[in-house]
Amino acid sequence: MSSKKERKSKNMFQAPKGTRDILPEEQIYWEKIRQVVQKVAKSYGFERLDTPILEEEGLFIKGTGSSTDIVQKEMYSLKTKGGDRLVLRPEFTPAFIRAYLEDGLSSRPHPLKLYTTGPLFRYERSQKGRYRQHEQANFEIIGENDPVLDAQLIQVFFSIVGGLGLKDIVAQINSIGCRQCRPAYRKKLVNFYNKRKGELCFDCQKRLRQNPLRLLDCKDDRCVLINEETPQTIDNLCLDCHNHFKNVLEYLDELEIPYILNSRLVRGLDYYTKTVFEIWPEEEAGRQSALGGGGRYDNLIKILGGKETSGVGFGLGIDRLVNFIKEKNIKVSSESLPSIFLVQLGELGKKKALKLFEDLRRANIKVASQFSKNTMNAQLKSADKMKVPFALILGQKEALDGTVIIRDMKSGSQETVLWEKVIKELKKRVKK
Image (cartoon, one colour):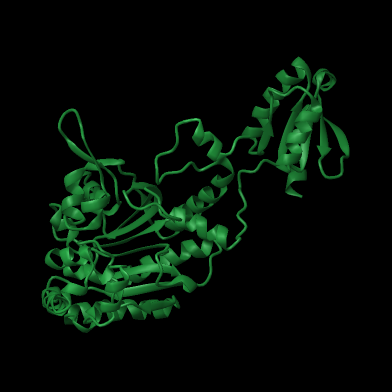
């Protein structure tokens, strides 16, 4: 088989930079994460909502913020033949709120709990766990301002990573205030940064004019050092934000969820208010490898044309979770692995095996076969590779006699049973 380097030299088509193929042998991780996400979502009362991959460009300019990196640097924009300005969905939350307003979800009982999984698209430097097309799970609770929902959403996050066997996970959490207290804090930040403007990176000098809060999130080494001396958000909260944040932390204490107060965590999106958080592997807290994050957005629905309605949500990076599971050597079993391999020989055997395969499938017995292979050795080798416990052998003689041979793949022992008894016998053996 030719190497990837050799294939490149032949000028073959390749996946676009920052994207990748998820091969069949890797699907077991993705399937496991989706299964756990779905199970946890149902147990907490979340309903699934799927939104289009294509959305109007203005939705994210208005919802996410015109000065954010997503809008200025990362969105894949296109203009249709009809003149519409569309983007490949860069995040879920504005799309959820658009659906909430457009599809009448606002008339349902609140709080409304919604979730989804699917691809997002952002133009950014490709690196490990960071792809231009990546998959995310997203959870939103819309319609209540109670701090208990902030804590429960973080609990949902921990339930998912716990269900995947991941340990030593910690939440980083902060409060960035609201429309009442943030203007005074913003003024303090501007005064602080203006005194050291010449030391800031180019992007932060630009952000200082547009959204100074985002300077706290800069990863440039020069700015990181400066940010250690900035005024802290939690020291500048109004009474309502202070009490809200205090209650969130008390709920997390009650749930015994480990957390770190990070006074410089802002999440970099304009719609966030009050609580913001990220979930990290404990030993990597502070690097660029958060498994996901989110926060409260009490103004977003009004910004996008609805009534003033509170919301809180988070996104979980499935690509990063897959990489983390692999790094920790966590074994992931697949519920879809077959327990039976159906071997067929001769034309009559193949015809009868085709019917038997369907009978087994309808009986919820997971079965594999390779009808295009005609020799017993080739088919049994395939059964060995799949590590199935049993093989069924159906040849010309068995087809005429109305029987099937059950072969124990481990011991090699075989037994002939009647066609009408094979499903009952297999269920008994597979159960053992």
